[in-house]
Image (tube, rainbow, N blue to C red):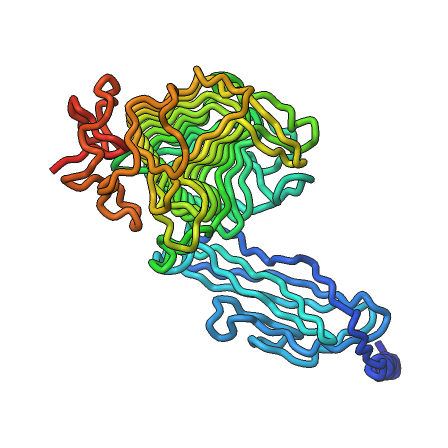
Length: 496
């Protein structure tokens, strides 16, 4: 290029630049920015000191220039993230001009040591944009430890944002069978769906962590098998590792299981489910008005030696499903420890439903059952409970009424049986034939060690001792300690 040609190019660029700079800024309060994504995710599974960079593109979709008054990293210097705007690194930027229909690249970097056990499982921050008085936020998310991570990649009407167990719900892949082993934690950000005919098996000792608003959903005809042991239970919990959050309820959504084929049961053994909005919900999938008429599921939810506690709503919610539960503890919920509506088959043996909620006022009973319910459209439905049995159980708590059962005239009550159960009732009549050898409203209470701290073991002079039906002896209790010939009520047998 000749000297004159070069001068011409440079002068043209200077004139163009000068013209562009003179473009008048638009202060219209209706103007907002566009973003290439609403969440910047660093999804690399780090194995050494992790460092990664992602790009966020912001757009001015108006025809005139605007001034972004501020771009701020919400946590400032305390953040694990770093930002570069227009080639300048920092945590706060002001008066960033964007020409009409122009865009700007922002580079975001994070540095995390994933092997630091004291760091969170998920690091989060936000970029905060202020334009003409409008505040907009973009989330920054990075994995904070070495773990198996699942985050939302799919959207479907009627379902929350989710990812499928096989990676992509829409890829038409054949059914899969997958096993989670206890090599490192599993972290779910959003919802993980176990699709129809897929089967997830979880080995002893696996730790499953859920982010706020996240959950696990076993879709209709999917299946889950949880194989915890006494020494190595499978724990479903939140992703906050600080001690402050150990007992704080409502930190993630729920585990939901839908209907399946007979024999394809969802089985949880030595599982601990804690601090959710709702522990387990078992019900047929309802995505349309026609689904409201679905029959009771053919498969079962089987709970063996499980603990579900500190749910802000319900620990166990069942509608038109079949449940077997043995040696299980349903402890402390904002509403019900167990709520059953509609039809189904139920067998509860040596279970404790104890509600001593301390996070606010509660007006609902610990245990509630009815064959009638109001569906999603507000219609009153009535189903037949095919069979119900509760033996050697405790339904108790710190309000006047912790046990309430009601049926409409459609229900055949000869299929219902409560036997050798301790309940706390207010005005409900527990003398009909469906109640046999019942104990109620004992002045000394059940005799739990520390129920507000989720310890429902029995004290030495507990009322529950030796009051169980000796024709039902499960052999061991929730701790797998031997029961004697005169079993105690509830999930724990007293031992000195």
